[in-house]
Structures are given as structure tokens and as C-alpha cells.
Image (tube, rainbow, N blue to C red; front, side):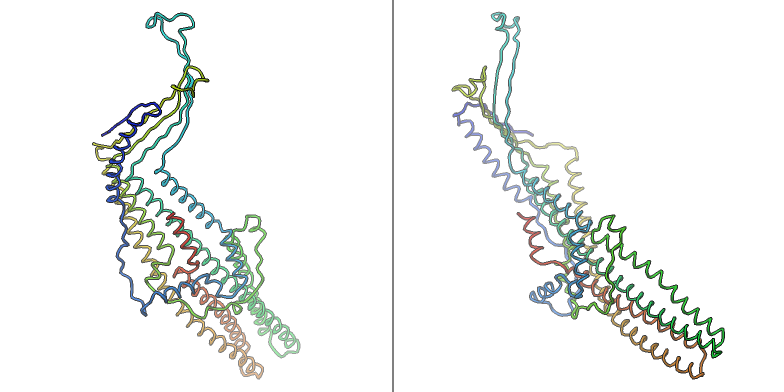
Length: 500
């Protein structure tokens, strides 16, 4: 179906333009009223959220969100703070997502540009030869004619219904990409923290192993002296040597793991290939120098849904999918086309802007589909199926988020208990080593009891280091799974950017 109203006019002839303008005003008013009914109306899907352990007021939610800003700084480790800063500035996954955000912002600009016309210019020069058969009065050079024209053109094509919904879809996609960037930043920070804590744990284990090796060497020298004077047997001397060799054998794998973690940190912090091959030396430290946050956040279900960036990204994609349904339905409605031209035409260039050479035209057309043989309906069904997928994806994201939070809360409790038990075990085996050594010196027990106590003491120290690492990582995971990390004004800036 096409409705066309077109006219040619000379500059100053406004009657035709006025009639067309009146027609377009009526059509535009009707289109605007219909478009209001087509605009997507988003409602968040109903979620069966768990009740909070304690009723949460708006003030409590804001206080918790504020406490989770830049949560990695609560470990009070300047080396960790520097690594996180490097990762946020240089990590390639974050940079890639930032490029996707810029693309989504450009697409939103393209969607907004659909509401504006295009303005252009054209110039023509034509030389034509007339036929003597149809124009016998022409002869010689009179058979040739030259015409020149110059004009400004205005074009406007708009499906108001589709354009409005398309703008909403583009805005939602930008918001989704912005939240996805936050999700990636949060994941990268979590990986940096976990990798750094594991690296500190390995440095701690290497320190324990080296100290144990030194103790075993001292004991071996003492055993060699005692063997020389016949105080111990050759078997006991061999057992001392075997213990030293066994402890030394543990050192190379620990250093190998340390090198791998340093390479992983280099990747996370965006180091170049050359810097990665050169290695990323981090000053040795211990886990005891890292403070565990005194107060850990609690689960507030409503705050989790409104704060965790992957949930917000999935919800924005759901909003975009709903807008795409409106875009598909808008294909049933007509498209408005406007074309205008104003300029001059003459047989010589010098006369183009002379009086009487002005030309112009103004046209309007409204066209739409009558029979599409199922194309539009298929497009609507496709968009509705995609909206259903987005709804399911949103629900899955919420489920996964609550599962991760529950696991993180349980891990915090479990690692607290494990650290307490590991610490008591270390104290017990330290006492056992002392008692075994005293009894051995008194000739009450054999050397094997002393060596067994030393092995168990070494293993208990390693276990305590791993438990301490796991407790710190569990605390970090809790902050991460609750969606902490960013200033509220940063999130507001994303919303303002997408709604401009």
C-alpha cells in the first residue's frame, strides 16, 4: 500500500507545500498515537527470592554496597592493590569488552539518527543532441543543447514505530554491554586476588620448605658426628639423609608452580609477550602479612539482584529482546518518505542563479505491506522466541548467582573451621617433635619416631598455609559473588550514557 502526494513548485509557491504539510501533520499525529501503543513496556520477571536473614532497609543496603566498593583494598596489601590497578588498566579481556561498549554506543547513535533527515547537494551538466526527424527546424549547431542544474536535496525515511522500539533496543544493549564490562572487571579482579593469594601461599610453602631443609641439614651434620663416634648406627644416618633428600625433592615443584602463577598474573595484568617471557618477579612475602577483612558482607537478596553486574546485564538483554519484539511488530505499519529539492536550472552556468531559473519539488509517500506471505509474522515469532530465551537466561543467571553466593558463604564458614583446626595441629606436632627428640636423646625411642614427627610437623605447616590461603580466597569470593567492586557513581554514569 502506498499513498503518494508529490508536487513541483517554483520558489515562493507555498500552496502545494502547505497542503502536503497539513497532510503530513495529520498522518504524523496518528502515527505518534499508534507508536505509543507499540512501545515496549518492560516488567521484571517474578523471582522467587529467599528471605533475608534479617530485614534489610534501604539504608542497610546502601551501607553494604558502600562497604563493598574496592573490596580488595580491605586486604591491606599494597602489592595486591598495584596488581589490581594494573589489571583494570591493561587487561585485554576488559579492553575487548570496552570496545564492545563503544560499538553498542555507536549503534545507539545510529538508532537515534533514524529520526533525522539527510541533507545533500547535487550538480548536473547535460549536453544532448536532438533528432532532425522530430525537430526539422533544427540544423547544424542548433541540434545540440546544454543544460546545467544545481540543487540541495532533503530526504527523510522513517518508520516511526520501528525507530522508537529500535532506539529502546539499542539503549538496552548498550546498558547490557556496560554491565557486562563490570562483570568482566569483577571476574578479572577476583582472578588477580585468588592468583596473588595462591602465589603468596607458594612463597610461604617455599619458605617453610627451605627452613625445614636447613633444619634437616643441621640434624644430618649432627648425625654424621655422632656416627663418627659410634653413637648411632649407619641405618640411622641413612634415615637422616633420606629425610633431607625427601624434603629437598619438594622444592622444585613448588618453584615450578610459582613460576606458572607469576605468568598467570602477567596475563591478568596485561603484560606484553616480551614481559611475560622475562618473568614477573614479585617480592617474596607471607600470608601472615595479609589482613582478612574484619567484617564480611551478608546476603541481601534484593541487593544482589540490583547490584551484581551479570544479573543486570542479563536483565538489560531481556529489555532489548522485548524491544525487538516491538520492532518486528512495527513492520505491519507504514513507512514515511519525504523528498525535497530546491535549486536552479539554466542553459549556461552564469544563469543558474538568475531570476526565473529556480526549480523545486516536494514529495511525500507513505507505504506499507499488504501481503507479506508470512514474513512479518515469522519475524515476530522469531523475536518472541528470542525474548523467551532471554527470560530463561535471566532466570538462569539469577539462580547461578545465588548458588555462588551460598557456596561462598559456606566456604567462609568451612575455611574458618579448617584454619582453627590446622593451627591446633601445627602446635600439637611441634610439641610432638620436641618430645620425640628428647626421648630419642634419652635413648627411650628410636630415630624413626623423631623423623616421623618431623615429617608430620612439616606437613601440618604446609596444610596451615593452604588453609590460610583458602580462607582469604573464600573471603574474596564472597565479595565477588555479591557483586562488589564499583563506585555507585560509575554505575550511574553507564545508565546516563545509555539514556542520553
